[in-house]
Image (cartoon, rainbow, N blue to C red; front, side, top):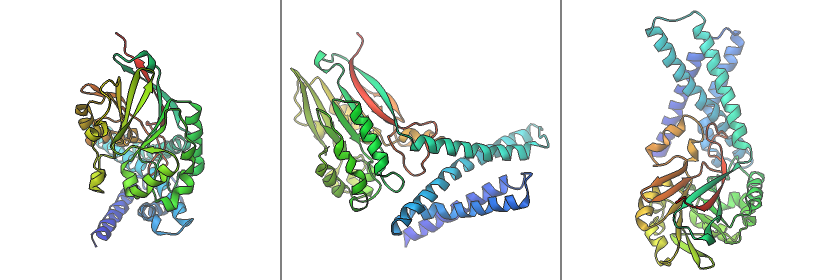
Length: 379
């Protein structure tokens, strides 16, 4: 009963927010009444599509995906409309307090809000659906052996194969990653939004990933929402090495690199046996290893990884915020949002993600395929 009450409550809130947008933006516009009615009807449809999209998996295919597409597109536009409408009201309030209120300000600001929301949504859609660009990141390492200088790891993360991301989208990613010819490939979680039965045909291209020193995967929180044990088995069937609180040793002549992986930070909530454990992941690693790298989906794994002795952590999860202003809220949960950071003596690189979640929209946080290159630190 509780989930139904929660869904109904959320639907009421969504409807009220749509009503707020309509009441604040439509009346001031100098447009025909018929156009205003169409705008109001769209807001009604949008308020229904948003909760419907979140429950779309209860509908049989292909209607499930079509409903998800419609709802997620509506969600992207609604998000920008809501933020910009609130911002407009704040500006109008400040102008009123300052005693400055030109006659055209009300309708012009309403028109500008609508236009800007549409432009941001269209730009965000293009940015989300295009193939992620390659971002090369040099990570300086003190006392890095010559044999490991220039070692590369191609990192992909947060693809979210599911209702709006299918096989063709993933095939392009795999082709570009293989074209980089990295020494190793790391997939740092949140590959899927759906079950193996629903998505196996669409994740099959992952089996084409290839690198001389291996292709490694760690679980993200969305794997646990989607049935992690089945996905772990499926990824292994495809030939990928799933690191479950364990490590491998990569050797270059007399130099050794430890590459470890942990389960998602929240995995223990789904299965106590999967509790994320950086200490366990590094246990038994050779003491002479020149570098210890951890693959961990969430950046906040760094709090346990640094004391465990890791030198570098590769993470994802945040999407870089995906689109403004949600990037401003990421620090409430994670210590880092994107890019190369430092926690104590350990460096942490956080990918903005290679796909997207929810609305097909990226604005101010471009997707990326990361080519991490180990280099000697300047003396």
